[in-house]
Structure formats: C-alpha cells, structure tokens
Image (tube, rainbow, N blue to C red; front, side, top):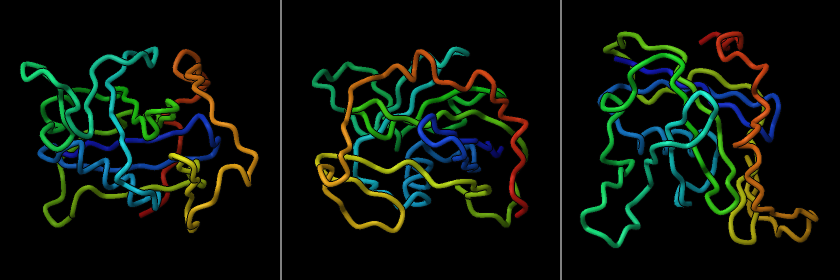
Amino acid sequence: MIYKFRLLSNEVEDFIRDFEVHSDQTFYDLHLAIQKNLHWDHSQIASFFFCNDNWEKELEITLFDLSDEPANQTLVMDGTKFSDHIKELKQKLLYVFDVFNERAFFIEVVEIRQGSPDKTYPSFTNSLGSPPVQIYMDHIFSVGDTSQEMGDLGFEISGDDSFIDNPGFDDIIFDDIEPDEE
C-alpha cells in the first residue's frame, strides 16, 4: 500500500508538500524525505506525533530513544513502519521539526492506494510555497541559505505552543487543495 501525506504549516500560509511512502517504509524514511526536500539539516532532533481530531498529541515516534529506562516502550522512527500505525484516511499527525520551540507541520493522510512497482518511495509529489526557516541553536537555515545569525534578523524565539491548541486550520480542508500535475 502507498500512503500519501499532505504537510501544511501554521507559519507559512501557502506552504504545502505532498509525499508518498510505501507501507513497509519507516517514519525515518519520511523524516529524511522531508528534510531533503526542504534543504534542511537532517541531523536536528524531530518527532512525529499521532494526533486526535483536535490536533492534540497522542503517540510519539522519536528520532532516537532518549529514555534511560530499558522497559520503556518508546517508538523510534527507523524501527516504526507505516503499516503498523496508518490505518485510515484523514489520520492526523504532527511532525515536530523544532522540538525546543514546538514548531511543527500538520500532516494528514489524504490517500491510501496500491503502489506502482516502477516507482521509488518515498516520493515527493506536490509543492506549493516556500517552507518556514529551520532554526536551531543560534542559526537560521532556509532554502538556499548558508547560516545566518539570529540576532541579525531581530528574530525572537518563543516557547509558545499555542498553535497546537488553536492551529488555525479549522477552515482548511486537506482534500480541497489541488496537487500539481506530475
């Protein structure tokens, strides 16, 4: 099976990315595909979260296990297949790409179908708008940029995670966004 995911941002209004993954692939494969597509540094900590219909976090899938307890049931990206967790259309996830500032993409499963044996997955299928800038430590990275000191931009990082309580996507219907032609 092939799962098609649509990514939206609460920071950049016209940002859309669609990715297709094979059910036997892992969340790490999607993590790398997102990072590569956005030209971001993929070594930064990130997590996927399964969410309820109100975008409230439920189950976390981490980049790597930071738990000190051996009995912990932490799900790790490179060991977690899509087929074990993706069960239906409109399933919601958050991809937290900046864990220190709670910045994330809103993700929804927009299609489940049989795959093409000639196609390589993950596959990037749709792009609209520029991504938000990647921020970590004291640098900002964006498409085509090298690093830039945050102080030069007058940018202030906040720990505000209010986008999770009110993501501003109440009026967006994932199905109404037209994909680019392949």
